[in-house]
Length: 508
Image (tube, rainbow, N blue to C red; front, side):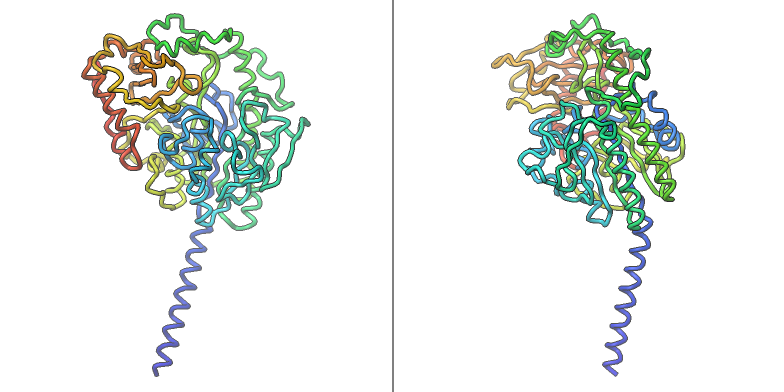
């Protein structure tokens, strides 16, 4: 009798286990796929020139009007995307040391792709990874958590990665030349389509990170797109070639005197090149969507189209580039389509690159680690009315080791907003734009530079940031802003979210 009872218990356990496995497999097979299509240095002025992307993603899903990059440079932004953290928590605040720092801190062991890979997803990255990859890791190094990997190899990304580049393909170095079939956006497209097909054959959900180099300089177009848009002109804002810079910090004014004679003709030429370089990426989007549809996976796939940072082309008389706290550099395109997203959805909430990882984690039913600073905007995609942040931290560069409040008299800033470091007189810390920390509120921008200079813009009255009001604010308002910024620049995890919710100020 006892043996029969024991046998019955064993049978029940086996049946329960089999039922659990079957349920898990069935649910897992229905898990949504996720694709990120990431451009490099794409600002909002380029959106109208990607018709396929607008039609297939924006019109069929959601378009974000207030999506921001919290550190407007390639490597810090990508690190924040992968971990859902502000740059002060990844400690990747500039392009250099970039990957070498990310690798040394073992941050690759807990990134979005690792979470998904551990959950059973097939994962792939094709194209640009982190600046300075794979310094200190060995040329054949492949980061953890990638099923398939083909990343540009190089110590920096200032050269031409459209032709004559080397890729690490799953640990093997493969050189590409200058033939039309070597055009990097097309190579990335072909690998992406193969990965989608292979994942469907494997009956597995997948995460695909498509990271093209366009429209990054030198903005080389595919042969089939050369000579297009010959009469196109750069859409100039009122801030273009701003004549009166007397209100701007000395640091910003110094950027206009680099010896680079950048004018409207240069802006037009560069803009045309950037538009043409993006045409292959626009075609890539179409090919990805068609391949998903052919495989019956389009309705089960979230597609994110986004840029790693913005770009300025003569705004405030600053030559072309990035790395400033101005809107051209920190506000970038984001479009998302996928299950549960109504076509034509417009999302105005302030979202950021730190939100991508937690959003995708929620989409795929994965619990994001507690270290994540961002928040999931999936409820926004699904049309829910949710409480949201009132602002974001914007940060750039490694600061000089000094306390702002002890070096500068915050109450005196209303009379003298232009200050210099009294010890070094150093106006440029790190790369162009100088180290800074700031708040991008819903209707204002407040920035403290590492040399002590301050900027404040009322974005409702002055959306093009023509008039720096820092010298007109009361000492009380400046102190309030500084206090909020000091807390935000050291925040971690859920504390960041609480602080972001408290960034409204009265300044009129």
